[in-house]
Length: 114
Image (cartoon, rainbow, N blue to C red):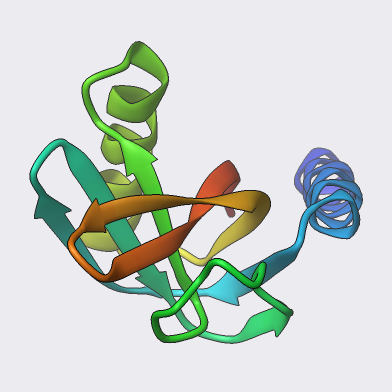
C-alpha cells in the first residue's frame, strides 16, 4: 500500500513538473485517438493551462508523429490506457504539428498513465 502511494506521489510530481514546463496539459481519461496521415491525435478530458497560439483545434487535443519510435511508444501507451479506462496525465509542448490542411494541434511532450 505504501509503495503504491509513494509511486502515485512521484508520478504526480513528475506530471506537475512536466505540465508547468509545457504550454498546457490535461489529467483525465482519453476521449478519442485519431490517426491522420502520419500523426496521432489524442483528446483528453480536463485540459489545463493554455495551448500555444498555433493550436487551432479544441483544447485538450495533442498530436504526435507516429512514424517515429517515440510516437509509436506514445500510441501504445495511449491505446493501452484507453482500453483499460485508466486516467492519464499529458503535457503539451509550445509547438504545433499541422496534421492536415488548416488543422494545427499542440505537440504531445509527455504522457503518464496512472
